[in-house]
Image 1 (cartoon, rainbow, N blue to C red):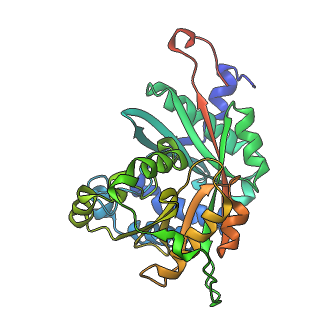
Image 2 (cartoon, rainbow, N blue to C red):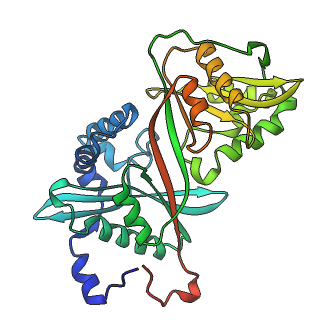
Length: 335
């Protein structure tokens, strides 16, 4: 990877400054909208609209870190300015997995009129240097699979690909869904939790699902899970697919305030595709809401089975990470 001299480093980064939520929130929202207008789903458009509306209320912004409904706004990162115009952005989201601190790089955006000038490259390098100084060992990001330019950029910077995950949305075309093997599907009991929990964690590993509205306790079918759902006001309905009294897979429907309700699929490795299809069809048919359903899953698994259940691809994200060298090598230049 390319190594910049101190002189080059200084001149290359002179247009970068820290992101200021009070000053920059509205401008960043507008920039992201311009850059990704053709790829935004309903929830993303709603979130951007939320950012633009909040940006107009400077008093609320000063308390954004402490107000729950505002705390999910981008609060840390860097922007690229030229002649007083904000033309580039990179957002940094700190998070914890099993007590270990990480950063996610997000909202890497450069105005179309300013592209092909290595702005995204330099913003990412600057952000990585900042993250390294925080003592964090790894940084993550994701890029759309139809954006090879971004994927190549991150690969050149040393990021490694981990997995591909696809977001699916249920079709709302009014067609009658044909339910097969209906007698195989039933309610989940306490004795099924160990298997369901193991499959959920495997299908939604913490390092990739921390930002999702997925809480393991919320899916526990025993009395403790029931009480937890009441206390947290979470509406969840679950079904299992059984054969000879053996659980082969499960699906959980979770109510959401977003555009679509959530589905969580728990199946073991190399599961029969018909199990996936029938669980999803059953969820579509018996869910207590007619609103669309959103499913996030490993993109290389069960794609045809998911499509057969009446779901369409929204987007596929490639998750990548970079691990900084150990401290003993900190004197060496990385890139």
